[in-house]
Length: 90
Image (cartoon, rainbow, N blue to C red):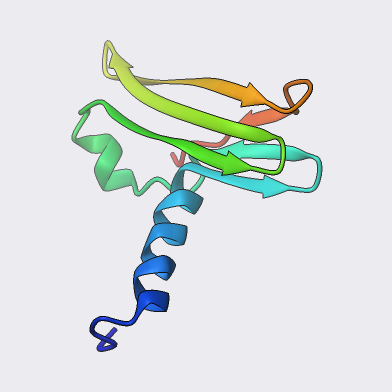
């Protein structure tokens, strides 16, 4: 980006990675919709979290079983678990 040591530049990168793993859509959480397909092709386990959301904190883990991705999450919800959709790229 060419912005060197600006704090806002670093925060933009953190927000981008967060949005790869979790984002809000109204009253629900959308998981993994921004994961680059190249990351999935490596078939290496990956995780993200604890990440804050309006519903509480979430940790997301992607593992592979017989070359198929398995998305799991744990939440520390403020009340009840919100609706959650997993949208891995194809």
